[in-house]
Image (cartoon, rainbow, N blue to C red):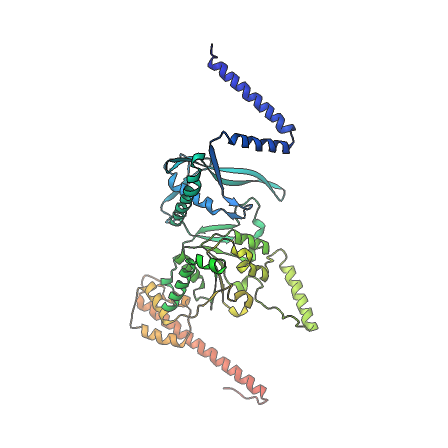
Length: 491
């Protein structure tokens, strides 16, 4: 007589319980090396009978140094192909902030088909405990696992995976929401954190069309940027990492930050605003570089004010007087006391950050420095090869004024333009000051009031410049007279 269903379940339960008891005894008393060998050979033995192949794609590679691009591509591919079949989804805001982008939630499984082959994707993670400053945290390592029958090995490994990566990249570009990143102070970083950067959505509206620049200069900069973005093969052929440095310099208010936003909008790049004073040392500077993504702009604004990187270095062999040495020792002691626990980033570390071996990780990056006083910077920091293109942003020209008049007042011509043209030839005014005067201050402000305000500002600037020039001339004449030993009264 065949056994009843109850007897079958009882026998199966007894067998499983016995197996678990034996395995618990082995795990407790059997040496780790023996167990590892047993598991390895067991898996090899089972592989002869198990007909499926599994491929894991992890989020991070190299001990969390860099996010795996393949993982991001798979995530994008599955977000478009799994939302209709998956039962548990997670939602993120899309590029235009009007619709949600759906993707697989953790431990969700979906099915895909490719050229008659059936495949299964699973989103999973491994949680392992880590210790940081005496505190234990759980560190998550996410991954996707692809399972398919071994008879489809050639189709999957050669065609399907290439198809997933290609389509995933296209979806990422389509759904990409540009971000503005900033780094946190080093003491806030923990080993269990997945990134050292925090970000917000980048929504700056600046474009080259709205910038107060001469058309020729705009065209030159835009061509340079677009050419760089399409030069991957060229950089590989000449043996250089795919990056380019830009130095933006000029008086305050001439549009350096606006230029960076226009660059990001033109190329659709993310922006990493690096605050050097929040970086502990050169090692953490390299870690920040590693965590930046491709298609990004790394920005250090007002670099002459960020750290002591102004290049005031004594030449080799140059000797100091006793008084100078004492003064320098006091200054160094005061700085060490003041800067204890603050940033220890050096000029050498920053130079290696720009074009050292670590700068070659990833690709398609712009590195942008801004400064109001380019003469203060060390020549090694801004030489060609590090800062490849120097862009001087000066005072507003009449062509720049016309762009701003079009932006603020929707004017292309006006009888008062001739007066403004003449005044701009005789005095200097920044684009920021022009924009402020063209900004309507109340509903009653019309274009004539705005233009009159600008004319008044130009006339005041002209008078101030003339007064300053007169004072400088008087001071110079007095010094020359005293040097000649013939003091005179300068009227």
